Image (cartoon, rainbow, N blue to C red):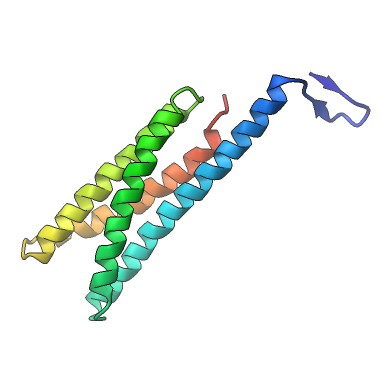
Length: 147
């Protein structure tokens, strides 16, 4: 690495291309994980509205859950395939796959609760844990492509 008279690092060749690719990679995965985190937070809002007796909230909660299942599974599988050779990519992919599994379990427990099973005591704290796991995935994006 060389520097000019202003002490700004100048990189040549592949290192510069790699930095740009890593920035683009982090940007796209940031958008995806922020979308997932937002959808999980909105799911909690719909749950609160449903518990408050708002009529449309049950449908919104259900539709959002289906979207969350599809998007987390897709993001998890795509990340495992496309990021397997990127530094920290495998760990990031495993976090997203874990999130997908947890969202699926959360939805299953929610369906059982809606059908009369006394599982709300698991459903609510698991929802909080899902928001934490999605926030961890969003934070993990910063490490993608880095050493």
